[in-house]
Image (tube, rainbow, N blue to C red; front, side, top):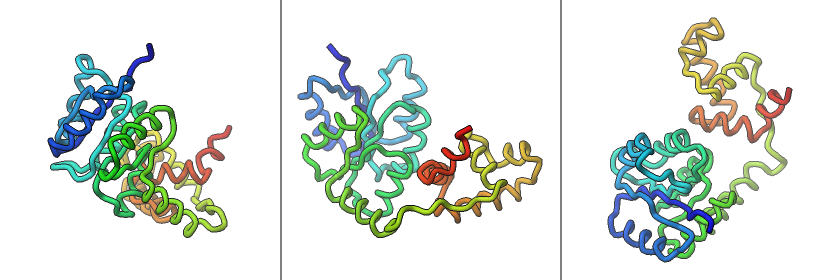
Length: 223
């Protein structure tokens, strides 16, 4: 018998947690192995993974007390690179949708989704697919058609900007980048600002994601 899909739920409303727990409890191929009311508690639990089953899929709310879901998303991705993250929220704001997808969410479901749709979404992302609310999928498709009518243009970065972006992708902070390139931290900050502007990115993860999507890294790292 195949291992069941283990799910972590990060949701601050007890009643909704109970509903999701009930739905997963009826799925023989799934199990809710942990649930938390805040992202901070969920992240702390991962440090003691010896006594806790590592989740295959994380259901993550956005509007949480303390750290919100969008801020927590890259932290979960870093701590559990093999886990798939589904945003499960009431927010259908375009900015939230795009940022979540840019940060690597494998799915985006609204809480108006049925419990069956949620369990199907978990199954889809676990198998390597994506899970999007119909309204969200329609919005993303419309956005792509509007913004990229002739194909996305590859932004032109200078050689130095490419070096800085590559080091950001490897996990170096600005001070470390400055030391490695023998330039000042202020100069690195300036380069990063230009990179964000050219890639239309708000942070390092979204800039790195855009670099891969537009072929900047794949072309540069082909050798």
